Length: 420
Image 1 (tube, rainbow, N blue to C red):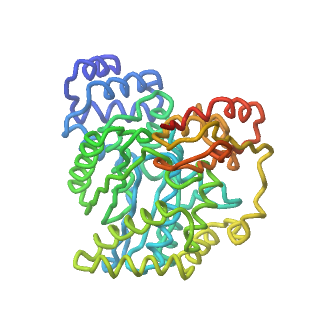
Image 2: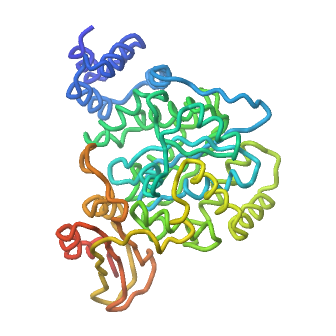
């Protein structure tokens, strides 16, 4: 086989066999196939798609590129949640300890880094000083069973093929591909040893699937391939036409999550955290009363038990819990700027995708996969669609250690919010 001819085959919209995909993936991992040829293949997939048989084969090939976790406790339900990505989406930071605090499920969560304009749970976790996300698989399994949850990134053991493809998709504009999204999400989730998966499929101008129809298609495909892989799957389509909560940026989102874990925070973040955790528990207990579960989860946020569980998880992974107990002690960014309204009006729309790119420019994300993230960088978006604002009202507050980037953003970021 030759990589060139396989790329040509996919460019023509033809189906590759399992052996051909095994050759291409293993060749890329061994560096016999260079990144530029894999990039060409990703672009061919982006435009020509994959048949269901190819998606199933690639999910299995990616899983087989590493190890698969098998938890020993057969009477315990292991579940996870995955979001297809958005701006200000910090739900995993709340859901994981909340679900673990309920005692109804255990949550072994393998998270990713920022992808395109969307933030990554792993980058948010690593904004907590000392927090170790590179647990061994043994540590990952033991911690999940000991305290109900472990939060790690992809290791060399779990789906190494996906780790390499994920980074390449991020910088080659091939993220918005339904088959590639299915392969990436489901290979990791099946490999981590769970039985149930809740999928938060974002729809809107800040999502990878910008129309509801595309989001529904992705949700249907994820459910189909997830169930084919042996999982119970519940997809939920949620709005990403505006940032989730106010905070966009790694430490800023952790801090907002702490507010929710203390029973406060933005209502949209609290509501979605409870909703998705409910769905997770209902996968484990299909006959349970949703209203009872909802009340229990709300109580765990309000009485601080979910926050205590988050501290327990962070401490177990060597994180500095002092900054979680006293967020004011966290280092301040060098530069802060507030953008205010020039005129009165009602917020008609928010360019959420643009705000995600703005956050990258401020230092909260990566332009290329070797970039270093500034955990303090980001923004607070003070308005929502439908809000009435007056001249001088705060619209967006920017944070960065890069003075030039911040000054440039002050000049243009007001255009992200449209009034009528």
